[in-house]
Image (tube, rainbow, N blue to C red; front, side):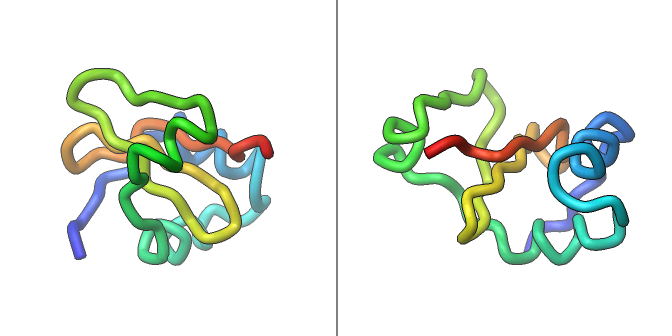
Amino acid sequence: MMQYRITKHAVQRYRQRRCRHPLYITADICRARPATKGRMRKAGKWPRRGQRLLLTQDGFAFVAAGAVIVTCFQLGG
């Protein structure tokens, strides 16, 4: 398991879109797995160069740039 730093922006987005309590973000990151090309195509999301998507089972995505969680969002569909 890689250790990630989490930006303030990512915590704010998590609280707005997922859960009011930011401590659950670590549990979600632990459960998240790298997105496959098929899953990214289906969601219509492509990360920028140097970034990757980490997806949870229930369709919540974290954007990681190296060892930093930059932002997060709910996948539609």
